[in-house]
Length: 233
Image 1 (tube, rainbow, N blue to C red):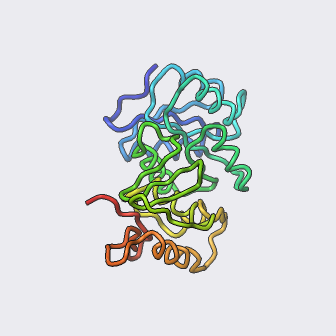
Image 2 (tube, rainbow, N blue to C red):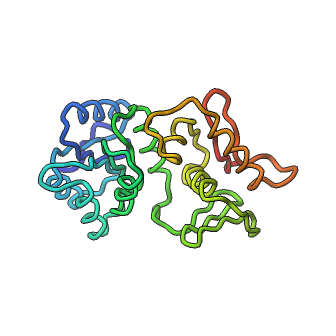
């Protein structure tokens, strides 16, 4: 059985055993014209994921019959390259790292806002086909994920570890508005969002390092919304 053809939007495989959460996700995504196929166990998710080509997948970490990380690892071993968003109630850094090392492309902790879920899927769909590459490019910026170096027009930029992580997050989502809450959760791994100017301070430091004197800022503030790495003309 192929993904449902109720719209012409991207196809999504959702593997989630919590029926209530799954129903909410399906309703939200279908309202945005995604085509959603839902499976309730890891074994069924694996069977369907191998049998059909999906544009993107959402996989819960804790699943019956086959856990989510094993499911993702098996898909990657079988050369299924569709981007995967991992859902989990586990929010520790080690848990996020495990999800990404298993082959996930992004990690979203429960509970989550449906708007953020949809935004993350759309960001994954905008990635190049070879999304698990070791080099990132955004405008004049180039980032080597193995050597942990960044250059602008070939000139090396010295970044601190947190600045590197922040810029990597921005470069993976060019021309996308990123809220302060998204940055605090995904770059700083905050589960409960504090009232802080931490993001603004680090954005300011990063701007001073990546921008060229007299040139428009690559990292733009979007009034009332957040920030954007602007690379399109």
